[in-house]
Image 1 (spheres, rainbow, N blue to C red):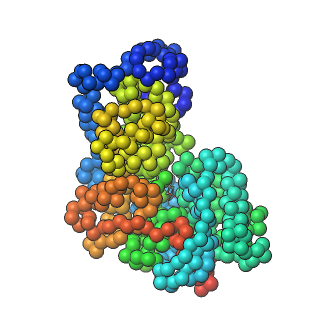
Image 2 (tube, rainbow, N blue to C red):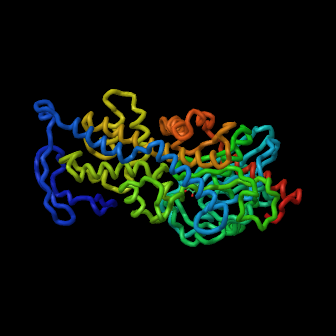
Length: 507
Ligand code: BGC
């Protein structure tokens, strides 16, 4: 099986030439002899590649296709998992968010929002104007890989510093200005017991900052805000899905579910307190609404009973910093799709079926193949598949034949389609649990896979039809409103009002 990481890069003592014959030794000392094809050979002899690539494709098709009956089985296991998570605190993490019901659409005022996402840190000022209208001023900062691993305190200090300079430099407010209410979108599983606190259960999406897991993120961030004298009052700690649910409902009251299909994946929906036994001690009326953060990326983690994992999914899991965790997310989310593709390529390279005689070390580096490449290959309109030529040549220094490029495109389709079909299972579980099929509902969706991956939304909706039959057409997905900016501001507004009105003021 293909190992991943830099250490498998062969010792390429051979010449740089990609043509001809020769040999090289691998790190384990094995001598590998290689012979390459030349363009002339391609013309002179019957070319066996097409058939071979087609054979490979059939194999991967069998491995990566999720049939309708299989999807229905996953949906029912998913539904059971949601019920278990709402029943009691413990191994299944389903999170009551302390967002009490839908917005009225009349929320108004100025709110700050900080979004610590998987890739960027974003700080915004959101002006809610009521009637579903708003204005956003924002600044984005790219997070470095180091920042995702450094001490947690440093990470929160960075967020506080960025917010501080945004308030002073962009908004022109001075160091004695009033504290504006702040919604902090922190999209990692946090067990909440009130809206402005939450204990990080575990990092996801490759983050690993020490000193945060098991601690109250609200408190850690509030400390950093104080340290930098930031004129902001942490009002609500929000998951991106909850923000998306509320923001989408603010502009389209038909929205019942929100999903993120980005670096990570997850969903939120609105539940009645009577169906959340684990918060029973709050004594809420049975029909009191509360938003639920499903943390569905963790579905089927650890015991892996329901998802059709392939050996590539297992390699990704076992070489991750969180072995056994986020099983669903690792098969679906943007962080991983390119890596699944790359692992399959490495398998073919190891078998001698791809890029024989070419220097493939750039492809052998873990996570070298960005998921964006998959969407570029899928959307290439040219007959020659010029986009793939460019990607493989420019980023990985290898040459490709048209048969190989056609295979790559089909492989990308298989991986992207599996992601969409598995995602649809999560949506279907919520739809079925809440009985939304009869009337239909709108699903607000955000994240780069949903917004940038060609065909993802269509495949998602097709899968819903495969699961539910024609009735599945009543579940429609829409590009969501900006959950971590606008959604977070609306939730901050709802919270300020709720507390001022003395409703569940301790939460
Ligand atoms: C996190 C969720 C988040 C999702 C999408 C997952 O890794 O656990 O909290 O909503 O990514 O950002």
